[in-house]
Amino acid sequence: MNIQENISLKPFNTFGIDKKARFFIQATSENDILQALEKAKELNLPLIILGGGSNILLTKDLNAIVLKIEINGIQLVKETDEEVFVEVGAGENWHEFVLHCIKNEWAGVENLSLIPGTVGASPMQNIGAYGIEIKEVFHCLKAINRITGREEIFFWEDCRFGYRESVFKNDLKDQYIITKVEFKLKKKPTFHTEYGAIAHTLEEMNITELSIKSISDAVIKIRQSKLPDPKVIGNAGSFFKNPTISVDRFEKIKSNYPMVPGFPNDEGVKIPAAWLIEQSGWKGKTFGKIGVHKLQPLVLVNYGGGDGKEIAELSKQIQASIEEKFGILLHAEVNFL
Ligand SMILES: Cc1cc2nc3c(=O)[nH]c(=O)nc-3n(C[C@H](O)[C@H](O)[C@H](O)COP(=O)(O)OP(=O)(O)OC[C@H]3O[C@@H](n4cnc5c(N)ncnc54)[C@H](O)[C@@H]3O)c2cc1C
Image (cartoon, rainbow, N blue to C red):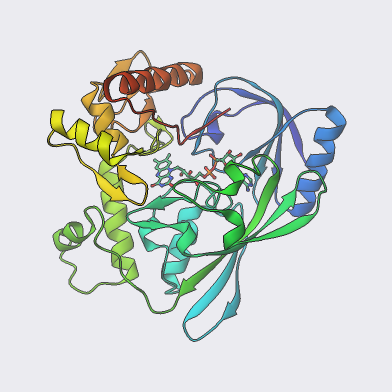
């Protein structure tokens, strides 16, 4: 196990924030993880888990051991007439995994094309896009208990998935290190083209025969046109979750803003956080080296050399202004470190 000291985490987070880790370890096996747990105990330092760094905001240097999970491997573990069960190392790149599924004609994750990050982080916040969440293809995961060092298996119901939520962000926060995730994929696809601009984009691309490859291509095209590429402008995707409010409150807002978009769900009405941010005048605002993206107000950006603390401060100002104007508290989707 190779331990590096005082290294910059700039290449390891998509915001491109230049903060340091006191110690940095890349784990390619379960054994590396166990050694890192020992080291953290020996040095009496916190152990912080890192995947692709696409859902974190670094606000300070980390006086900790940062453990980057790089366990690889994609293995077909079981097959029936209708389904395949595929176990994937937590360190595999999510989009590469999606492409692997498409190549093998395993259906279910094509709508989740081009989401940055690793497979191991995907159950953490039940990643989702274009009408699909990973809870729909998730079978189970293996994780190391940080106290006992033992491997445990979590099945679907154990994970308590919700909208950008799982048990690992709540009751079991910082207690497990995910090493492998097993997905249940379909041999015969069910196409989901009803969400977002997928159908329209397929038409534009002159695609008349649907396939998981054509849906993936359409999703990639939409995402590339809508979202800033972290390689060009630092960002972590949607900074806030879309809030669900009561029907009463929604109607009240509608009386002042007849065009307010709303999507009824079991708990009330979901409002796009992007709409709230835009209505509050933040879209495209720049503050030195950071700002709110000019096309996608849900995305906070680092134009280069920006500070994580300033981005955190900006996010608080946005939250406060939306609470004042609409009485709605936005919750961050991004994890602050
Ligand atoms: C341009 C852009 C677009 C995005 N679009 C979407 C989208 O459409 N839908 C969506 O859901 N998300 C989206 N995201 C957010 C992000 O891609 C996902 O949250 C992704 O799953 C994060 O993966 P990661 O490996 O980068 O996690 P990291 O940022 O490294 O970590 C995220 C959290 O998970 C923990 N963690 C990571 N790996 C493990 C592990 N193996 N075991 C235990 N804990 C772990 C970390 O400690 C941290 O708390 C987007 C991000 C960007 C930059």
